[in-house]
Length: 188
Image (cartoon, rainbow, N blue to C red):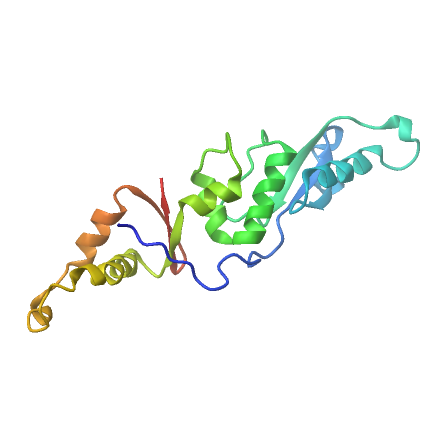
C-alpha cells in the first residue's frame, strides 16, 4: 500500500515570481528586450489577446505582425517550455503551478502532456512530499501499523526495519524528485 499524504496548504500559490512569458514579434527575435512580459497564469485566450495587442504595436492596426515567439520565461520552476507548446498548454501549466506549487512543476517536467486535464492527472499521480525517502518509508510504516496489531507489545521493541532498504524498494516503481530539502513522490 502506498500512502497518500496531503499537507495543509499544499495547493497554494508559493512560486515566486508568477509564471510569465516574454513574447516578441518574430521580426524582433534578436532583441528579447523588445518583447513584453505576459502573465501566463490565466486563460489562454487572455494571453492571446495580449499577444495580439503586442503585435499590432503603435500606429496603424492594419500593419499587424502575425508571427511571434517566446523569447524568455520565468516562474515555471523546473519545467522549461520548448517552443512547441500551445498557449493553451502554457496557460494550463502556469495555472497548475499557481495552484499546486513546485510539486506540479516537477511533475509536469516528467509527465506526458499529450492528453487529459493536467490538474486532475497531477492529483491522481501526486502522493505527497517528505523531507527524504526515508521519511516517506516511515509514513508507509505508520500507515500500515494498524495492520500490524497482531504483534505482541513485548515483541515490538525487537523489531527493526531498514528504512533505507524499504525506501529503495518502495520508490523503485515511483517517480521521486528531489528539490532542495524536499522529496516529491508520484505514481507513474
